[in-house]
Structures are given as structure tokens and as C-alpha cells.
Amino acid sequence: MKRNRDFFRFLALLFALAMAQTMWAQGQGPIQPRTGTVARPRPDAEAAKPPVEEQKIESRFKRQPDSDIVEEGATFRSDVLTVDVPIAVLDNKGRFIPNIPPGNFRILEDGVPQKVTGFELGQAPMTVCLVIEFSAAFQRFWSETWYQTLVATQGFIETLQPEDYLAIVAYDLRPEILSDFSTNRMDAMGAMRRLQIPAFSESNLYDALQFTLERMENIEGRKAVIVIASGMDTFSKLNFGEARKVVQNAGIPIYTIGLMQWIREWMDSRNMMGPIMRMDFLQADNQMRTFAKESGGQSFFPRFYGEFPSIYGAIHQAMRNQYNLIYQPTNQERNGAFRRIEVQLVNPATGEPLRVVDEKGKPIKYSIVAKRGYNAPRPVE
Image 1 (cartoon, one colour):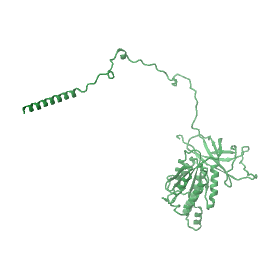
Image 2 (spheres, rainbow, N blue to C red):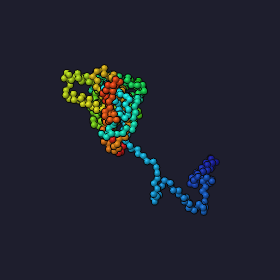
Image 3 (cartoon, rainbow, N blue to C red):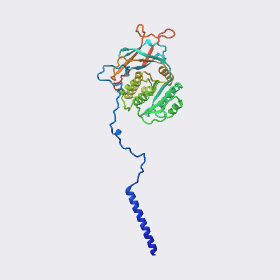
């Protein structure tokens, strides 16, 4: 027993010595080896000297304060205004009149003649957006106006060329893109199948035009907007004056097709249309005419389904065959004011109106389709 107690005492003494050694080592901390990577050399006399300041090299672009030398260089202005005016010259049957020389065109801006600096003529693939009114107020499922809307839309799609880009936007309370710009006509057919049951009774034409024109602003090439609608606007954020400015500044021709013409006449002949409704429809027609005229397009108000093919042909002639004139206005002031454009066909020798004749030498009555003006940019633009 005594031997066992001595043995346990010896173990306790060894344990106490080990604990004391551990605590002493923790107080000292780890000893880092002295290697060449961490040693710092002693500062010598050369290092104690202040660094010598290097000689500065003067930049050759720095202008000396007492120098009278004026550096030569090219100067240019990037704020020169240019105006692009697409023009269609049509006969009394709506057919395009080709082969008119550029010297026969005269452009007046606010009554001041302008010098034409660019002239183009040709047929190019079009980028077309169909803006369709699809409201529960008129286009209820299986109603006459619903059927007329589908017939007008489908018929126009079939007249497009394979290389033309097409997008379809339908609107009621808000515009909705049914199909984006594509040359695949199956996308357009899929969009047409969505025109079945309208959701809202509102018809916000102004907002739909602003949405479409802003979306097409950065698209290159020839473009046009086809509006198939009643022309009424019920709840847009824009008013008519603001919508006109949007149309004028966009510079994209708008072709409008007014719906419900024969239905309105049928209702009016049976005293089913009151004076307020009659005035609303007349105002809607005038709005469609204004948007088309001020953008350089055309407006149509068919009363029979048989009129649609001729309307498609007139739109095809006007939007695909155009003279494109470019000029720099003499008034380069940036004040945001509206500037009215007038396009004339004249005889350059006499300055009188140009006389156009057909193959048999008979005079032709013609009309000039061009935008009515534009808003000058502001200084901040």
C-alpha cells in the first residue's frame, strides 16, 4: 500500500512539473526563427540622404502663360439640325407617281424656301407596327366590330412582303405587345388568335400611340404605323394636344383605318344615335385624320368590306414608294417651337406649279403626302 502511495505521489509531481512548463512557454510566446527574409538591414549613410528630386518634363500640351501661339486644329459643329421629309406623290386613284426629278421639289419651312441636300427614291423592306383597338366597348366577342377588326387586320398582314418586319400592339386600358417585330408570319397569326375577349371597356388611343412611336424611335430603315380603331379615346394620360406633339416629333407616317362607318350610318338613320354620340364619332374621325395628315400618312374610313383591298393597295403604294428629301433648315435656333413644312412640285424654270400628265398627255390631278412640320429641339437636347 505504501508503495502504491509513493507511486501516485510521483505521478502527481510529474504532472505538476509539466503544467508549470506549459504555462511558462505560453508566457514567453513562440520563438520566430531568424531568417534572411524577415531581417532588416541597418540604415547606412547613403540611405539616410534625402532622395534626389527628378527633373520634371513639361508637357507639350501645356500652354505657357506668356505664349501668344495659337494651336491649329480642326473645328467642327455637331449641333447642326437636319430634317428628313418622306414624301409620296399620288394621283387621284391613289397610285404612286414615280420618276419626279429632285429639282421639281420645293420645301418651305415657315414660308422660307430651303435647300435640299439629300434625295432618295426606292423600295426597301418596311418595319410596320399594327396598332389595333380591342376594347369591350366596341369589340365584344362575335360582334360586328369585332369581326371587322379581324378582317381588316388579317387582310393587311397578307399584303406584306416576306422581308417586312411586323409587330402587333393591341390596346384597351393599356397597350399590349401581342407579337414583337419579326418576319415570321406565324407570330402574327398567333397574335391574332389572342384577339377574342377584350378585358376593359376603355380605349386609350393616345397612350397606345405614344407607346408605339417611342418603341419604334431607334429602329433604322423605313417604318410605318397602321392604326385600326374607332378613333375614340376615353382615359389616356395624354390629352389630344400632347398626342399631336408626340406624332409630329416621331416622324413616322401613320395610316389610320376608321372602323364602324356603316354601323354608325345605320344607327343614325334609325334615330338610334343621339347628338352626343354623333359628336363623339365625328371627333374620333377628325383625330384619326389629324394623326395621319401631320405624320405624312393617310386616313381611310371604309363603309364596305369590298373597300379593304383598295385601301391596302393605297397604303402599300404610299408607304413603300416614297421620295425621301433631306435639308438643313436656315433657322438653326433650338427653341422647341413648331415649324411648319410645306412641300410643292414646281417647274424650276418658271417657278409655277408642276404639270403632270399621263401616257396620253392628259393632265393628272395629284396630291402630295408629307408631314406637316416638326418641333425644333431644345438647347438641352
